[in-house]
Image (tube, rainbow, N blue to C red):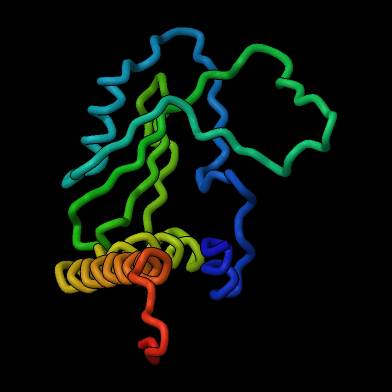
Length: 184
């Protein structure tokens, strides 16, 4: 609900559950040529993103899920042989953009050509706001002062839990009051 609220706050419709923000890419198997190895694909991604600090590499694009199938309906797999899948990577760079900004790159698995590059600035406003939410929630977005505020809030929550248990303990297991006293 919070993610959907972030999109609606800027006037956008929230994406369907599981909808990947990556482009549709179809790869045809070439007549000759070998598929790039994982390490060769990683080297291409490293060369395409100088200054990278973290690369998450996967074979294929995340599956696109649409609306749930009606109850009792069977999902039918696509007919025919499976097409070759591209390599895709999520790359985080130390380039002065927000600490959570990432780029999505899609690589042709045979030629090594970059098919698609999507950065933080290319995302919709709703997606950018959504990206800020986690880091604001943990205090990481504002650096050390934000982490200090988040830490104090956690400490305050712990004190509230302790006082709740202490009051309950005293109420249920405390000493019985003396008759005739105006219990305090």
